[in-house]
Amino acid sequence: MGINQRSEAESGLKAHALGSLESIAIIIGAGVFSMAYAARKVGYLPRLACLAITSFFCIITLLYMAEASLRTRGNNQLSGLSRRYLGTFGGVPMGIIPILLLNAARRSGDRQPEFTCGWYAHPSIQVAIIAIFAASGVYAVASALGMLPASW
Image 1: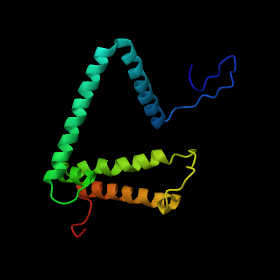
Image 2: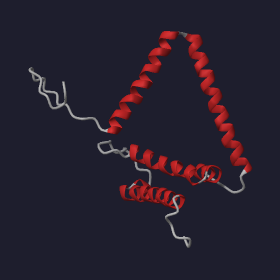
Image 3: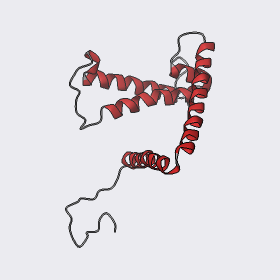
Image 4: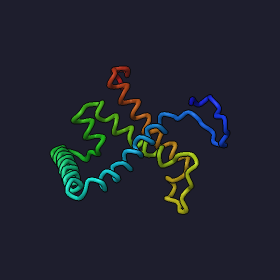
């Protein structure tokens, strides 16, 4: 039965088309819940093996990042390290990820916290921070594509 078709017995539920973010959230949520269910069904040994393999790869990844940050002169953050070693396209995801995290933390309809975090918790300051991150991402993409003049 499609979204626009009416059922014979009205249930009072309204069907609407899912957006792409809702679809992604449903898929990820189903994956997270199914992992716990599958881990319960297979037993302890496969669960411990999966945990050991995942821990090994996490430790190796963190050691690679630590080695890169120790061998690089200067005080670089992750976006600077990724831009240096992976090029401009490496810095773009590291500039976009904080935007997505800020957007996820400030979704419409979320309850405001009981406490305040200082002057930077004001919504206009948050918008300015998001705009700065977005501008840095646009600048990185424009410079990678050669769209900026040489004097910039």
